[in-house]
Image (cartoon, rainbow, N blue to C red; front, side, top):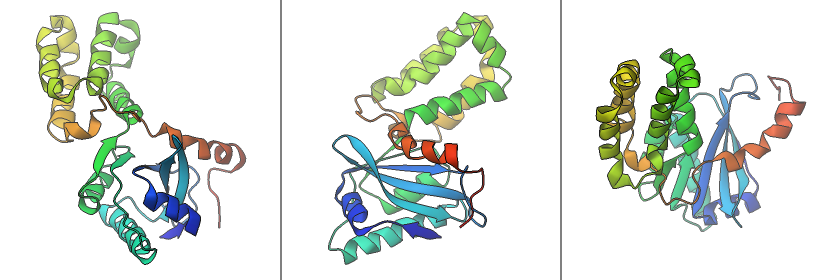
Amino acid sequence: MLVFGSPKQLQLLFDSSTIFLDETFRTTPPFFDQAFTIHALKFDCAFPCVFALLPDRKKLIYQQLFQKLNAIAVSMGRTWKPEQIMSDFETSLIPAVSAEFHESAHKGCYFHFNQCMYRRIQLLGLATAYSQDESVRSCCRKLMALPLLPIQEVKTSFYNLCATADPAVKKQLRDLFLYFDDYWINNIPIEMWNVHDYQHRTNNICEGIYIPSFTTLDENIYI
């Protein structure tokens, strides 16, 4: 693991109440699995504060990174307890954040939620129906809009959608409904992917730092 961040960047990170976690795999050098960045919110902008090259995507490596940064915060006379954390839905990242930031509200990026949904639509062979059948597309988009509802209405709205869908659509989307119920209702906490009344619904605010890299670097860079 290699971690980079200046004292000024770290000070900004530890003082911020909202942080964004982001990763990319396109410009990762040999011997590392991903480039992981942590951004702090200030003046309604996300400032990159920590750049880390990680060897894998396991829960332990994320925890080691967070613990190291927390130790640095203590050495700087600060406590690192952000009120809000936003990330994608990386399977190992979710429990690592929960283990290291007990008091923080961890939100999943709404853009990545919809990306997960559309990938599942493709995986289930529903892409053509989604693009050509308005009834199928409307039902799928209602699923994608569930994170925008008040959290107490999410489950009821989902099951109502399943129950009231047109019989032909319900048959086509049976596996999608089962996936949503199994994964988003019963596996990932609804509190994480619900973004109702939440100012920052995505971590796309962080993506800008990668765009210049993608246009100037090869797929693999070397240190």
